[in-house]
Amino acid sequence: MDELIRLTAADTAAKIATGEVSAVEVAQAHLDRIDAVDGALHAFLHVDADGAIAAAKAVDAKRAAGEALSPLAGVPLAMKDVVVTKDLPTTCGSKILQGWRPPYDATITRRIKDAGVVMLGKTNMDEFAMGSSTENSAYGPTHNPWDLSRIPGGSSGGSSAAVAGFEAPLAIGTDTGGSIRQPAAVTGIVGHKPTYGAVSRYGLIAFSSSLDQAGPFGRTVLDTALLHEVIAGHDPCDSTSIPQPVAPVVAAAREGARSDLSGVRVGVVRELSGPGYQSGVLASFDAAVQTLRSLGAEVVEVSCPHFEYALAAYYLIAPSECSSNLARFDAVRYGLRVGDDGVNSLEDVMSLTREAGFGPEVKRRIIIGTYALSSGYYDAYYGQAQKVRTLIVRDFTAAFEQADVLVSPTSPFVAFGIGERVADPMAMYVNDLCTLPASLAGTPAISVPCGLSEGLPVGLQIMAPALADDRCYRVAAAFEAAVPALTPPELS
Amino acid sequence: MPDSTDSANAPSAGRIGPDDVAHLAHLARLAVTDEELHTFAGQLDVILGAVARVGEVAAADIPPTSHAVPMTNVFRADEVRPSLPRDAVLAGAPAVEDDKFRVPRILSEEA
Image 1 (tube, one colour):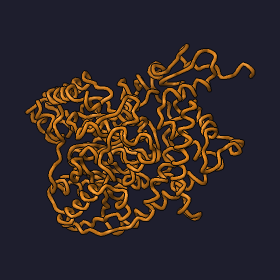
Image 2 (tube, rainbow over the protein chains, first blue to last red; image 1 turned 135 degrees about the horizontal axis):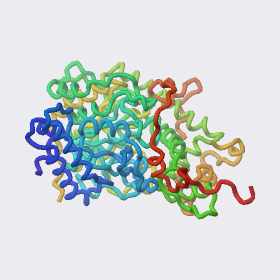
Image 3 (spheres, rainbow over the protein chains, first blue to last red; image 1 turned 45 degrees about the horizontal axis):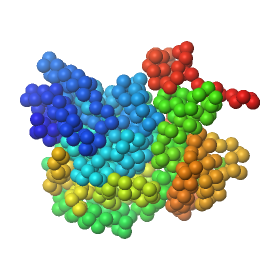
Image 4 (tube, chains in turn red, yellow; image 1 turned 180 degrees about the vertical axis):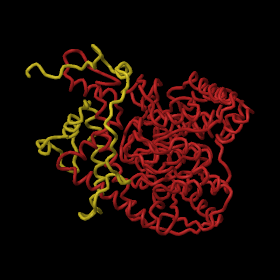
């Protein structure tokens, strides 16, 4: 049933709703695809075939009983392993949680189940979402469907590879510094980081609490919007959840697809291009700006002078918050315990467990964070980084007075080779150069495919003011309708 | 959090040696191998050198932003409600005894 795996989520839901296909057939087609190609991709850490078929049967039974189905009922989804799923393994890509089965569902897990979306399994990721390539997973890297020797982006690389490789039409990712947008860009799909607080973080294993944000992946802008509306909305279980209605992103995606961009002012951010960016990426980006202009958008150049400090601020704030959040992995309540021989003290067992359970990137960041928060350095590092964040927020505010949305390349590079940058943390960190400002400011941003360079996908990033997620979708949908779709080569 | 004596032991800015990494790792309750101490020392030096740029722009009169979205305390009614079942919570623990988490000894022999 190869054609079933190539349908959009919207078309799949429509065919299930009319009875043209059953949800079980759709789920089985995707499980077969996973069987056929995941050996090469390694997008999944855990496949829940029984759970998926059971969820699909429930949708089919509901339809047979004449009950109304929600807009994505019966559509398969791949869930990033940072999201807790009751009774299903959740490892966060780490050895320290190997075999752990959470006793509760995250809010987004519950919303997905309630919407009849069929969860196929849990996807690979950089350990504790720390990384830009999915090479930091304790369970081995994920491969890019466009070229198996290359990275699928990170940290949500399992989710992006699953969608790009037709293992699932939809996936959930989380974005702390760009971990939805950057993998979407390098695998040629759509990924949206919602406004901070628009999607509940309850049940997401925390990395950097002031930045972490879950969001949707899809192969089209409309599919991504449909999933956005399933997972977004206020959640009393998350004190940072915004008690406001969800932006009408599905309506915006539909409107964007059928209209031009007359009256829309698009700001090109001067600081997010130039030296350090691959020439093929810049060429694709320039062509994308021309397309926006041809759609009727007014294009202006804007300057955000503090964006160049975003990388430095991010790599202080995120490790600082991670060093605090990961203190909960103490070998007492869940996960691994090493060295409990009756002689070692609790403190020794804690240290030995964390040594054995965490990989190098996690340890590196815990140590940086411990340093940045330590007495005597807090003001110089963490405190200063929080001030830079204020300056970046002000840059955005000024830029959004001149433009309705801002655009940039999503990543300075196309997907690089697995293993190429592992030994050089700073070379790895610059992957997120373009995505970090919106992370620090909490503003929404989407990545939509905008062409190929060296035969590999390039992403266009579209940023909007806080709570105006619908603007990202509207502009992205208009752009998507105007450019040819990208399809990765066949996987054997 | 490190106590006040830690600042005396803390590494000097810009030069992170293996001893400094060992001290920080101890504060973070993280055992590290000798090889890791040397690898991390070199990498942390480079990373901290790069991120120290935050000091260049943020003047004293700039207020810090801890969350991009304004945050207020969220309260709920103080009502007794069922929590997760004890068995479900203990199921993920590395060691359990008498319906409780079992922990390694906390006090050393001398204490």
